[in-house]
Image 1 (cartoon, helix red, strand yellow):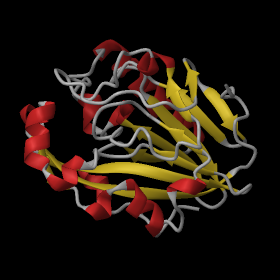
Image 2: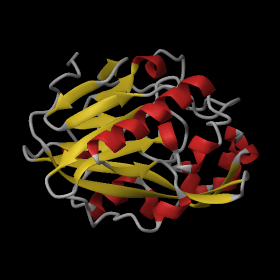
Image 3: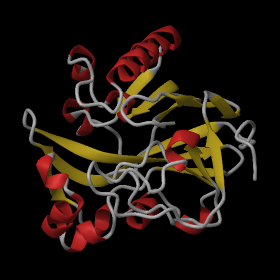
Image 4: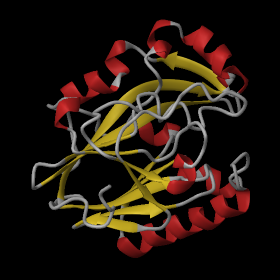
Amino acid sequence: MPTAEGLLTGRPVALHILDYGYFRVHAGPRVVGIMGALITTDAGELVLVDTGFPRRYTEAPTESELADRLDSFGNVLECSPRNLPEAQLVLAGTSPERIALLIQTHTHIDHAGHLDIAPQAPMLIASAERALPRPLGWPGAQPMDWPERDYVEIGEDVQIGPGFTVLFCPGHAPGQLSLLIELPETGPVLYTSDAISRPAEIGEGFAGSWDVPLACHHGERLTRLASERGATIIWGHCPDQWHGLRKAPDAYR
């Protein structure tokens, strides 16, 4: 099994934000984008980050919400074939067969719907998530199984390549990961995933997290890191930010 440190040889040169659809959260209420990412290095390595909802959400969203007990939290507003990872990768000019690494930030169902995608690539995941009998899915329902593939497990911050650090930030989920990458034009970018879904979550004390004190600790750590590095922050599910983000085929460089 490959180790995480030095997993990539090249430096990040492009970040495509992938649009996996829209979701309405009952609390608020608020409408949020479901996000993934594709990161390209100057060695031609392609890193896919998260994969959105399972394919069945494009065919029967209401039935899928009920089966997964997601309806108590919110409702899918958009999850069409265009929002599947294969289609989003085409927009970014590539395909699953070219992916060199899959990073799974955590295994809630809106991030982990295609755990078997790009089977030729190892999956980088926190040990705390991989140790679960099944991926998290959603509280009360764990509909997915772990696929047979190579896993690279971490339990701390790891620099997986030049200018590319994976940050271990449990709180929202047992093995929540965030990313810090250095782009040649944009500079440092902190991709929080759900470690901080939106800035307001900090003031709200990360209510509803798997471990609230841990979520608060890492929320503070990430915001401090972003300030120290002068990083552009891409929040996990920020309604105010979503529409202004560059999405595939556009990219941050």
